[in-house]
Length: 526
Image 1 (cartoon, rainbow, N blue to C red):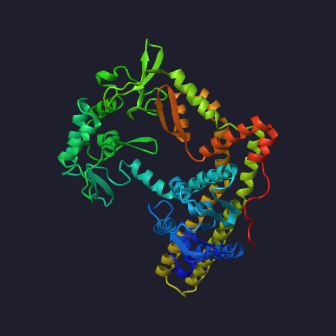
Image 2 (cartoon, helix red, strand yellow):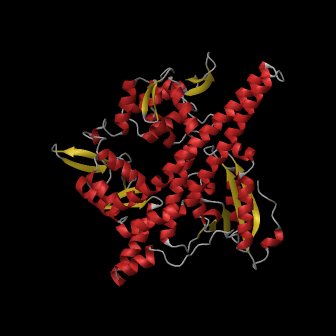
Image 3 (cartoon, rainbow, N blue to C red):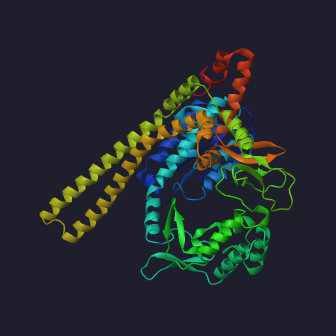
C-alpha cells in the first residue's frame, strides 16, 4: 500500500525525489515473510546510497496473472501528477512488469528507473544497447510470469478435455453450476437467440460488419453488467468464436464441448468465408492461406489487404474495399515480400556484437539464477522440516499421545504443504533452465529475422511478422510498419551504427554504439 507522503519534500528542488515499488507474485510469498521486507530494505538502502529521497512507497501482493494491480496503477497516476518525481526504484525487472503493456506505460512516464538488484538505471538518456538489453529481459520476465500460471492452465486444460468450457462464458452463454457440482455454461435465454440471428444475418453476405453490429445492438446485444451496447470489434470477435458450434479451441487443440450449440458448423463456416472475403462478388477467388492476407491494412481506408490468385500462378494483394471503392491498385506478392524482407534486414547485427550481447545477457541474469537456486534451497529446507513433523507425529501416535483422527488430519495438511514445495521447486528449476535460453532465442530472432523470413512457408512468415512488426499499412506502393518492442530499439540502434560506420568505420561504430564502454549504471550496494 502507498505510504503517506511528506508534503515538504514536494516543495524543494535541492534533493532527488522519487518513489519505490515492491511486489510479490503470490500470497504464499507474503505469508512466508521474506519477499516484501527484503525488497523494502534493499530499496531503502539503495536510495540512501544514491541520495534519493523516497516520497512514496507502493506495495502490491497479487497473483501473477490476476488482472489489475491497484498500487501499481496508483503509482502511475502519482508520477503523472507530479512530474518532479523523476526516480522509480524497484528490485528487478520482473517485479515491475507483468506484461508488455506495463513496460510501455512506465516508458511513457519519462522517469529514471533504478533496478537495484540488477545494478541498472534506465532513462531517456540511456544508450540504445542498454534499452535493447532491458527489452530482452522484459520478454524473459513475461515468460517467467507465464510459468507461474502453469498450474492454473493445467486445471483449465483438464476441464477442456472433459468438454467443459474452462473460463468465463462468452456472449450468448452464462456460467452455472451443473448437476455434478462442476461449473459449466448454458445458453443465455436473453442473449443466445440474438447471437444466432447475428450469424444468420452476416452469413448472407448482404451486411457489412458495421451494419451487422448496429442491428445486433438494436436487438439488445449489450454488456452483461454495464448494459452498454457492444462495439463492432466485439461483434467481430463473436463471429470468429467457434464455441458457438458446440466445439471449441483451447491451447491450440479442438475439443467437443458438452454445451448446447447456438449455430451449426455449416453456418459458422459460411460466416468465416464472409469474414475472409470469400463469399462476396467483390472478393471472388480470395484465399485466406496466402502469407500476408489480413496482416497488412490499406493506408487509404484502413481495410485489410487480401491475397488473390491470378492465372493460377500469380498472387496479387488488394484492399477488400469493405468501406467502399478504394483507389489503391493491386500489388504483386513478390513486391510486398521484398519490402518486408528489407525492413527485417534493419534488425541485423554482426557476430561480434551478437556475442557481446549474449555475454552481457548472461552477466545480467546471474542474480536471477542465484535467486532461483536460493529459492530451491529454502523450499527444500521447508520440505525437510515438514517431513520431520510427520515422522515425529507418527511416533506420538504410536506412543498414544495423539489419536488416529488428529494424526491423519495433520499428516494430510503437511503433505499438501510438501506437494506445494515440490511444485515450487520444479517451477524454479524449469525457470532457471529456460530463462537464459529464452533471452538468447530472442536475440537470435533479431539477428536472423530477414534470413528466416525468406526461407519459411506462409504460415511461419505470418507468425514471424506478428511477433516482430505491428501497424503494417500499404499505400502508394510503399509499405509502412512499426517494430514491436524491443525490436524497435534494435532497429534504431542498428541504423545508428550503420550511419556511424559509413562516416567513421566499422570499429568506431561498434565501440561507440554497441560494445561496452565506461559503465553508465550504478553498481550494486553492499
